Every structure is written in C-alpha cells, then in structure tokens.
Length: 358
Picture 1: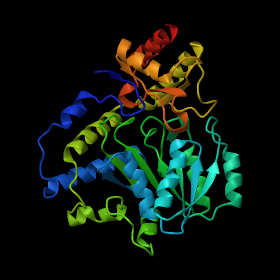
Picture 2 (picture 1 turned 120 degrees about the horizontal axis):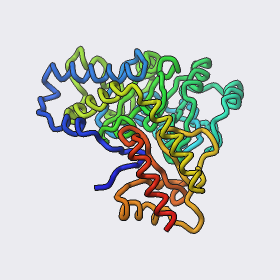
Picture 3 (picture 1 turned 120 degrees about the vertical axis):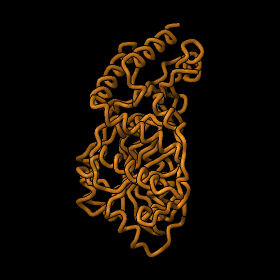
Picture 4 (picture 1 turned 90 degrees about the vertical axis):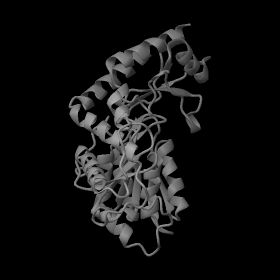
C-alpha cells in the first residue's frame, strides 16, 4: 500500500473505515434510518453555515454537479459558466446536455480571479437563470472567491451553483453569508471518507426554480426534486447506500471535532508552496492558491510519469499528475483532509526532493 498524498481520494481514518463495517438495517423501511439520514444532512448544513436543506446522493461528486444542472436547466435557459479551469469549463457539458445555452466568463487559469473585472462583466451581461462556479479547480489548484462572486450574482437575481468538492472543509465556506443557492461536495476530498457519495445544499429559491419549470427534469437519478418530502413520506427515491453514509457521518464528526482544521490547512499549504520553491521548482499558479492542493510544473528534461512512478516505487508515496490540458505538464500534492498532517507533508516533500536530485 502507498501513502496517499493525492488531491482526492485522500487517506481515510480508521474510525471511518470501521463505521462502514457496522451492522446494517434496511434503509428503505427502517424509520430510524430516515432520522439518521436527516440528522447527517443537518450536520452537513451546520458545518457549511447554512439553513438550506442538504441531500446526500448515492454517487461520486460529479453526480452532484450534474444533478444541480439537470434540475435547474430547461431547454433554452441562459447559463453563465465561469471558466478559469478544467472543471469550471466542464460545467458547460452538463448545461448543454440538458438544453441550456452557455455564455462563458473567462479568466486566467494561473492568476486569482479579478473581482472588479467580474463585476464589470455582470454590469453588461446579467440575463442568466443561473451561474456555475468552482471553488477549487483541482487540476490547477486555483481558488476562486465564490462567496464574493455569488453575492454579486445575487444582486442580479442569478442563481448560483458552486462546485466545492475539492475545497469544502479545507477552505472557509459560509453558504448563507455567500448567498449560494446550490453547493456541491464529495466524500473523498477534505472530508476524507471513501469515494462514492456526493451531497448538495439547496436554497428555497433554487427549489422554487425547479418546481416552476415548464418542462420535466430530463433525468430521474440526477433529479433533486425526487427527494421532496422524503422524510414526511418515509420514502427514498432509491435505496440509500447505508454503509457509505455511516462512514460519511463519522467523517463529518471528525471534521466537526477538528477545530484547528482550517488553520492547519492554511499553514501546510503555505509550507508546501515555500518548500517547493526552495527546491528550485516552479508553482503552476502565480496567485489564487488553494490550501488543499499544490500544483508544480514538471522541470525541464523530466517526465511527470517518471516522477510519479519513482515516488511510488522508491518511497511508497502516491502523488498525482493532472489531466486534460495539463496532462504531463504538472504534478500535484494533495494536503487536504487526513493528508493534511505536518509529518505526511514533510515526508512527501523530502521524497520528492530525493527523486528530483537523482
């Protein structure tokens, strides 16, 4: 086994693994499980500082992103896609799949988003049903000011969908203060549960937009409305993955108990970036750094694949490359969730230094 230092999936604490092995009831029929599910959803809402309802869906983080777009988009709807990274741009695929018409706001993929420029864009272009934003675009590690952006979009009556899968619980996020309508998270990043679950918080405004549609939502599994009144009806739209949810609940309790979590992520993010530069390496970003992942340009005459393989073979540590337009150009260290310990980060950096020196 390797020490996992990738930007998701991350290391999983033993108490989370053990929770997944607990005895199961029938989640379709046991009233106590409906209570357990709702309590777990409310725990997520509390950790994200929102009164909005949270729903846990049986599927990886991408399901949450698609479900948000599927549930909001009607054919012909105008949607703003903020594009300064692979996942930011990728939202357009979901919007267009359900018949929406995309307008892009494009920003640098290597520099922090300029809020003044964004405000200027919205003054001229604001006839949108909703906008999609990415909190941390994992392939590049760029961090976006999604709360500021969402508040600005709200001034024009534009609903917001935020992908916070790779930032949530490793970066500050206050959903209600940011006026965010739908925020999507995943189990396998800074939350440090196994992959397989996504969760979304949904505002009343977003629910009304879904309910007032003139056309049916063109999906069942990616339809957020199928959960309406699930607790009152004691009826889930599909059988809940109970063992996964038990693991998720324990991971959430770990996060809640870890009051130094955000400060530690910030300290280790800064430490990693400094150490990388002290090695003579170049960061991919110029600004807008995330504290959950550091992205490093592959040095000249070196191969990303070779670096990754040697890290595994010689040091039993798994870090990541990237994909899409960044494939082969960068390597990534994930210092989020259970990965975010000083000992593990230092061990990873020391191993990387040895690989690059030989």
